[in-house]
Length: 179
Image 1: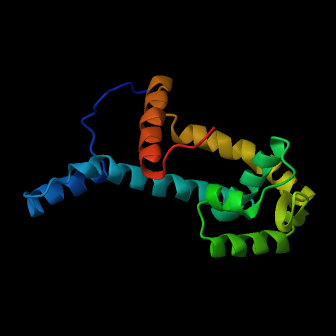
Image 2: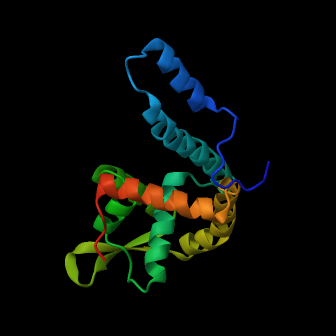
């Protein structure tokens, strides 16, 4: 079904409807209807991540490595002389130990280089190698196409509205970003 829906509540049921109905029977004293939103966000995240992971595996990548490469690529595309690990830490949503392990693996696989930060002799800047840059250039068009397909059932107005609503939720949890 590839029709565009605009503010249409369907009679179709999904797995979250079944979970909410189960809670309504099991514990009618609790309001489980928050799951209509939170449950769907979590479920969509899992379903979308699974599809993305399968597509990336065809290129020998996992999401965590691709996320790192995309972030460095995007920073370099703005003219930055590489990315500081602290900036990667906040953008890749990892613990500092998780980031260190991911950077080590990316370096061992020849995707990145760590160079001394010219503005801070103690710090480092992460840059892509030719292999890392070529990998991103090769994979990102298909990744973007798949991302568009994942929301293709929605019309542009619905996508815009959903993006606005999700942004409000993200800001309420992580705070607004400074310009």
